[in-house]
Image (tube, rainbow, N blue to C red):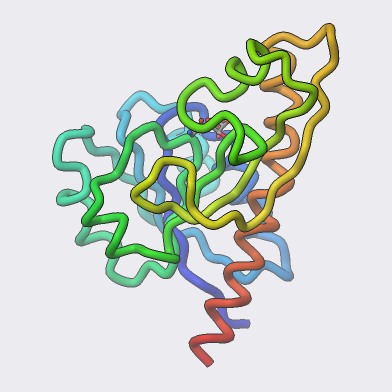
Length: 189
Ligand code: GAR
């Protein structure tokens, strides 16, 4: 079975990375994760990448990140940002148009930017959620691929809401990636 080649960019814990790797190892997956890049050498996600024996694992500081990584992306079909906390420069984003996706912990277009779960709690919103979307030069504004609502209860705080949202993130990100993989493979054939 033909598969697309994916790179995952991380900055921290890597739980979305793990869910993407796990689903990519399922029989029906159209995705091969061959590369993990972090902009933080202490990211726990790097240990997850090692545990699952991802073939290529790198870490580069934030300065000139885009330049340093470009040579590793030659045969990559799609880049998935998974808790990657750096705004990529607009030239890079343009070059990867429609091949660069992100997961954001809110039901976009609500609560863009940092600390989205906290924003939702402070706004006393009735629900938030998570969204997988294409990355464009406008933060958290690219076309939505998949999203899921999560109810906010009176007793919820930022921590409890983050946990509930994260569980849904782990469900929708692999689904969204599989959907895109199908599209890319159809185009190629
Ligand atoms: C996730 O909640 C992800 O949606 C969020 O960071 C967390 C990373 O967790 N991303 C953003 O806020 C991007 N703006 P993880 O490292 O365990 O996947």
